[in-house]
Length: 306
Image 1 (cartoon, rainbow, N blue to C red):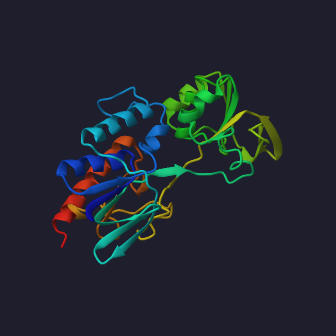
Image 2: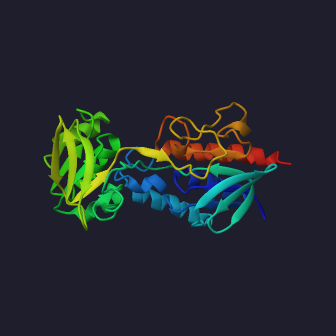
Image 3: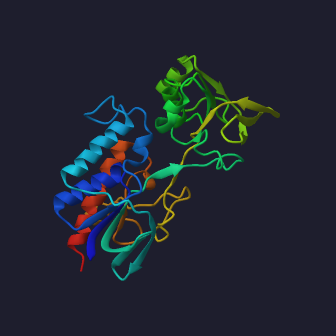
């Protein structure tokens, strides 16, 4: 079967594109290993128009309910590669291959690793990349958060509802992030900031026992029971070797007055949307809008497909 569209990713951009595709009644698929993407990591979402004071998991539920209204089912398949065969695009997954006229890549981002000793073998045993997912497991425990940008500050505030003590650690001497988050963190007596620290090792046999860091030429073993890594994100583009990327690995897209070129990559028929692209603003509402734009541009491309 030749599909009109294959959507890769079920975050806000991918799900929005899928809803528009269903309304157009085209032949399409949406492929993703998870539903919601990075929205699942957000403890609080208070800037999505019309639904203030909502958690990331709750907004994912609303998006998913909207998919179900159109009988859209996300295929749980990992995409391995994208190829071209003339004008036809081929999407290869671990299970099969799909032929399509267009592709929308909305695969989002994944956490950046520290690449230090103890990180991999203690993952799920005290090491986590998702405070929203795992915070309840650390009730009355001592934890460390690596990274004091917005995501680190949000993680600290969320963990403060559960943990006994939180160390917020960063290589910078001062807390970065938005002022309103910074103010809330500084006012919370459970949270202590350690600046100018270089993380050396995560220590533990069966579970996390301590975090080793260096500051002012001195090394410290900080006893903790959990470590949350919030040092940034990288685009999930391992499968997308065809498309051009910027120096941060984000997919480069057109921003053209010609409708059918909006959100298109350097490969005709392959579009991209949301945090996986080189758009500067990484927000749920922006990603959803970009998914809409990509879908509309793809429809225009499909109508002209020969």
